[in-house]
Length: 468
Image 1 (cartoon, helix red, strand yellow):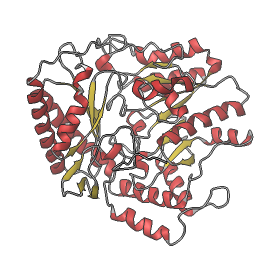
Image 2 (image 1 turned 90 degrees about the horizontal axis):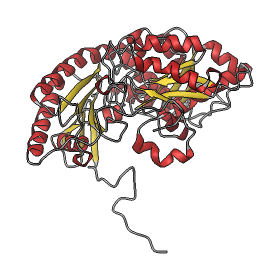
Image 3 (image 1 turned 180 degrees about the vertical axis):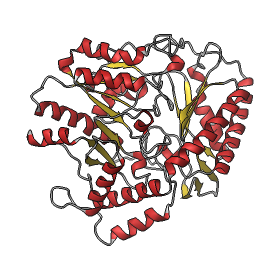
Image 4 (image 1 turned 90 degrees about the vertical axis):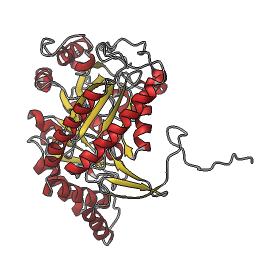
């Protein structure tokens, strides 16, 4: 049999080559050539406590003396119970039970299936629709992808997906309605009620959203009263509010959980990423006693994953959570996040290609524009999000690129370093970013840049259940 030889048998999303990692410690990563990088996006916004944490390594060594894996239907294990109890103790009232998974997509899949099981247990079998937002990202598995509105990731798979109703995200910079807050009267939030009535309240089970937008919208912080309106609508129509805290949880936004910024009480939350900070695959769903007991009494929750709740994952998760709480890393994220946002705004004053600076805590982003007054994006052919990321990488700074307008146009990068970052390291990161933006500006000056063909208003009319 003929086989094509490959220098590297691995493949991921593209054929792009990356350097070989040698070691990682704190907020830094070194490649095998000895080059040192600032991890300015915590990997995929996951390494909340940084790299090489001694407490986590000690927890791994200790748990290795006992058991790496047991199956949840055969044995319970102490790390799983201890971590679950600590999560409950630290969470808002009404999140009393924990269901473990191995990652963010699994967490979202589990959350929406738990929601469906709950309504079935109550005899409300018609409630099956989950309303989400556009742009949004909730995961790559088919159920989570159906809730996602980020075109490059979903278009190839749309024939395989169950269409999910969408409403506009609270993307004030590019308002779907071409309105301005607060004169808009929160039309984007009130669109939820419209969507519920269009679908039929008896058919709607839940609304899912990231409390602060992640990769798809670039650290999008909603207006302060946005979630109060959302919560009220959910209550009036008897639908559940699911918060996707996969990226925002565990101190990332300056609170342990992002819902705390608004004293919000979700019905279900999905957790992962910072939960184990990249040291082990781990995620969870949290929900209330009444919801869980209804599901269990109705025949149980017919769902699960092989690695759910295994002792090594939970031992790591417990060590990570202890580090975040004991060393007040959420508080550090709030403080250094203010410093970072201030520095990013100063950079925006120097570089007209920055259209908006946004974020909270250590989840921040820059959105780039070809024309600041009209907010017109760069042409897609300019690939600004990749250009900025490459120039940053060449200067030893790792950032996270995405396209802002539903993945079809526009450019932004996430800047989200580990929560252990110091004030001096924030300054170091900002200096490298400044050098990056100066280089990008010079490169753009060497060519004629035209705004993209897209108007700055995004077409997000998906209330009828069609994904974009």
